[in-house]
Image 1 (cartoon, rainbow, N blue to C red):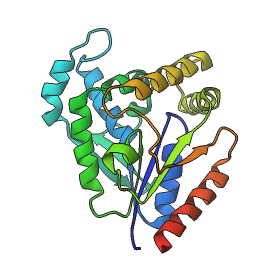
Image 2 (cartoon, rainbow, N blue to C red):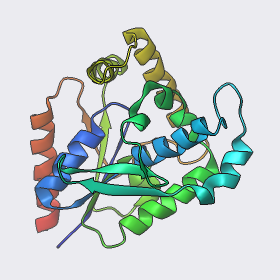
Image 3 (tube, rainbow, N blue to C red):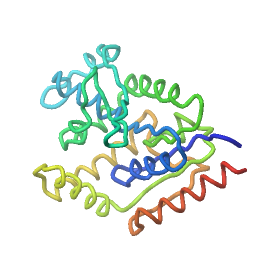
Image 4 (tube, rainbow, N blue to C red):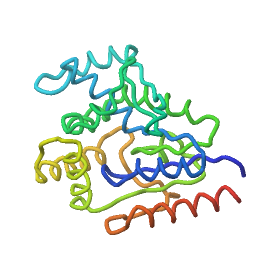
Length: 228
């Protein structure tokens, strides 16, 4: 078949990005973290005081043409990092403050329209692994392989909590669990491109599944599709 498009969707903190990166490396495919794109727009909105204590969504919409997003490879880390208007914001977009608002920003139709167009352009030549919330349902509904990842809220909150502590952030587990549950609700109930499993997607509940087992199963699926 040659190169294919692989869409990985699912809830926050299910390890989508980790699996997607590993899979892209193994297949020598391009990896696109759409969550980083929404996080970068959220960071911009926070920096401009368009969300938070004061809300000015209309100004964010007006500013969208000013927001330049690029993934630039970091050879030392062996991965691409997110740049917002020429500035490396990879660390800033992973902060808890951004996590608290990213689902809300992702509900804005104009934001989704802008980013979906960018994502579709990135994948026009296939040979790509992309993860997010609406990749298999909206961005690439014709993707040859669709994965839908899920896990219990407690399992995901535990992973996210450890990740934030490792980065030096001071947070409580309860705060992280509440954020995970809130994002689940917003992502699943928003009017535009809600999180849902595509009819032809393969579901992976990785609550009790290790990274290597997940990777081996998904890599095997990808190889079967590519060969056929």
